Length: 142
Image 1 (cartoon, rainbow, N blue to C red):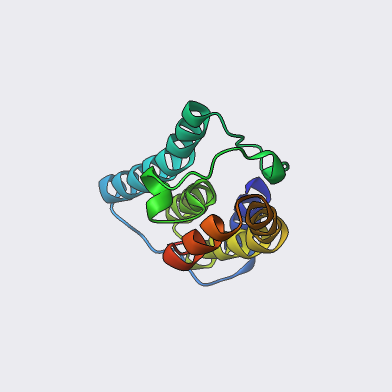
Image 2 (tube, rainbow, N blue to C red):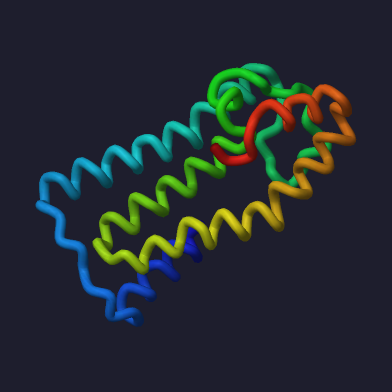
């Protein structure tokens, strides 16, 4: 996520698309709202995972003991990653450059390929039909 944010920042200097000037108060409100929503989307599921006693470690999805289907997981199979993407959108709004928006889809493509798809395979192997029904019912992102 940090690398994608850095890329977004560098792109603002490399691409002469110009700045989208927002009034300062609107910019702060927009950035704060997106960042808060991103943090909430990232932290709330971690609390739920802790409460039910399953792992939040993305490197060990096979050690998941409970399939979480409540809270934000009713809307997205990956609310924690969605939170990261929202924080990158907040960062792009802070930078006020349309090219800075590249960070969010870049992050989403990377995390889908190298984290989410392997997690989905591990969760399908662990939870079988229950996870496959969940996949059919709830979208990967939003």
